[in-house]
Structures are given as structure tokens and as C-alpha cells.
Length: 412
Image (cartoon, rainbow, N blue to C red; front, top):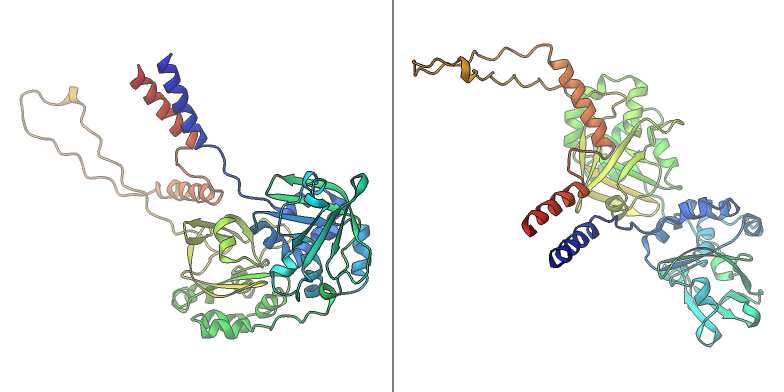
């Protein structure tokens, strides 16, 4: 019995370490399951609030239906002002349905992302929550300006003490949040790159087709740029000059992702990403973001580049330097390596002479020839597996099983 207890404890320790670790919530995916909130969801992405929400641990989002978003959109607010309004609908505390109906004293005040960003004046970024009789719960901005409070409708999604997505009857009214908000100062991408060690790449953006225009037109909606340093571009230029005009443009656009990614987001959200060069099929001109601790690498099936520095990281724009040019598999092929020579065939013991003690030397290995082709195929297969996150590493279940087997032997 004691042996069985020890084995059970060992199994518990081993397999508890193999359970998947939660990577947090994703408000975009949560709302995607509810088409009636698609407009609200769209503007969370357009204003870059979705990323801010996903980075926070404890949060409550007050969402409104497509129909209830119409009066707000009819005011034709700028995207930056709309961001302030939606920020007022993100409470930096957890308020699930149960907590709302059990408020101490029947009321509470919560800070919001609008207040947390410093854009709100005084207490304008706070929302008052009131639990009325008969189970009605209402919300109102502190500076509602006499507008009536809005009501709790239903709970959409709750993960206890992590995230609560709550539907309310209409958009919160706040003159402070709806006040005109100036756009952030414009950044000249090519000038920034030229001054920070990426002059060659910047010059090519200016000189190649619509490259510069494409990058600049994507800044407002979110853009991440990976800028090869001048030394890397110098080594790559012979290849670049041999490309067609379309190929040159594709290579440059391949270094931009049409969404803002802070360095922390790149470290935590590994996987395949589309680029400015990706067309409607969304299956080409992409690469894989991977990280090893604090080191972030960008892997195509041809090259691997490492992020070496940050030129700017201010939502909605991030520009990073990398030590290699990103070469897309659509235009370049991996370097083919010669297959290793076959190992010498050992002389069978039965055929070895019994009287002579002289050693027989194996014939020199034959030069590599046709074996090169399958070697290249194997290399491509390995690249494909690596790009998909695969590998030849033993999975945690295999390691655990082996450890348990060893433990059973020891116990026996």
C-alpha cells in the first residue's frame, strides 16, 4: 500500500507539471462568438484597446450591441476620441454578475482605462455602479452631465477574478471622454530609420515602388516594422539587385506587420504572422515569431533574424532593428547542404581472418553525388516542421512516462 501511495504522489507531481498553462484572455476571440457585438469588437481592435485589455490581468468590459453603438458612431468622432469613449467602458477591476448584485452598501466606484491613461481630468475617468432594488444594476460615468445611467443586461463571459464581459443597455455618456482628441505627432519612418542605423533599408523604401507609401498608410491602423541594420543590408544587396521590381517590393513589405506589437507582445504571442506582402489568401509571405526568454527571433524558411534594438514603441507604431534580412521562401530557397559521406561499412566478424592480426582498413568513402537531392528535401521538411512549431523534442508526456517507469522499478 505504501508503494502505491508513493507512486501516486509521483504521478501527481509529474503530470501536474505537464498541464497547459493559461496564456490569459483574448477579448477579440470572446466577442467573435457573439455577432451582436461585432461593431464594438471592431472598434476595440481599430483603437488598439484590445491589446491593452488582453495585457491586463483583472478587468471588466462593458459591451454594447451593434444597435446601441449606432448613436455613438452617428457623432462621427475621430478614432482617437472614440478610443477615449471605449476606454471608459473598460473597468480595471473584476465585476462579475454575482459581485454586481452583492455590492457592499449597494454601490461602488471603479477606475477605468480612460482614467488609467491619464487622458481624463480629475475624476472623469471613474464609473459609479449602483445595485438597485429588484436586482437592477446601473452604471454611470462620474461626469455623465445629467445623462441617465445605463443598465446591466446580462453577463457574456466570466473567468472568476480575471475577466468579466458584461452587456449594458447603451453607451456611457461622458463629455470629457467625447471631447476632441488630437492625433499623436506623426513620425517620419524613413527619417527615423536613417538616423538609427537602417539608412540602406530606408533608402530602398523611398526608391522602390509604393513601399514607403504602403508603410505610412498602415501606421494609423497599427504597424510593426523590422528594420535590417545597414551591415545586414550590405551583405544582402547582391541578391536584392537580381530581383524583379515586384520581388523587390515584396521583400520590403515582408518586413512590416499590419498590427501594432509591443516587445512584450512579441515575447508572449509567438506564432505565424502575416505581413504587408501577404495577399488575400493569407497563406503566403508570412514568418514565425519565436522567443527564448528575452530574445525574440523571426524565422522564415530561409533565414532567422534576431531583434537587436527598438527605434520606437508607441502605440500604434513599433519599429525594431534586426540583424538579418528576412528572406521569404516565395523568392528565395534555403542553402542546400551537401549530404554527409556514408559511414564506413564494418567488416563482419565472421569474415575476419582468424590467423592474421593485421587490421583491414575500410575503403575511402565515395564522393557525395545523387544523395544531395534527398538531403535538400529532408532539409525542407525540417524547415516546414520547425515553422509549424514542431521539432524532434520528446513531449512532456513521454518524459513523464519514462520517469514513472523508472520510479516503478525503484519502488519494486
